[in-house]
Length: 183
Image 1 (tube, rainbow, N blue to C red):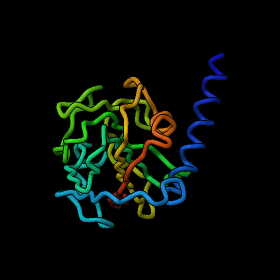
Image 2 (cartoon, rainbow, N blue to C red; image 1 turned 180 degrees about the vertical axis):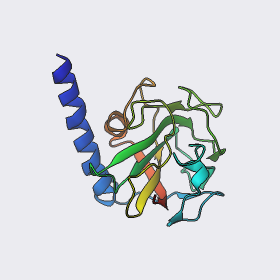
Image 3 (tube, one colour; image 1 turned 90 degrees about the vertical axis):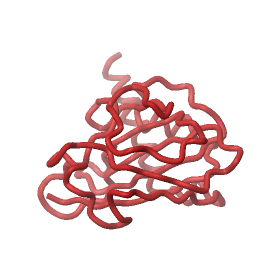
């Protein structure tokens, strides 16, 4: 039974990776959200203090362009260049629609002060896990924000694949900022 559950989780993660690879096809016609960070510029390096080589803290994020009918927001951060193809660094969902950003250093707790729920990162832990690629080429970290038309009925041990499956057909808008890091 445990092997079956593991197999199902892997299958769901493969499905989610497919969604990640083709976001414009899946969410075609949806407006783009604007997402920024005071800590790094789009397509530029993420400072060391936000990585495993530093304090492993989440960077500050702000966003705009949230549709007025949005019920909740979800944020998923992935390393698209990970050796296994994609690695999840942060899962956050059911963030109230009126929240316009996150401060630097969000605690790694199930719920956060802003009202959202954090799921499991690729290391199986709650909250943000900073970039920590193997030595070599630059990795790209996609901070992707989704505006949803409903709350997600999930617990804090939800994976990115489970969040993506639950929000399918409920995404009203999305946007991302990409930061880089190499060791």
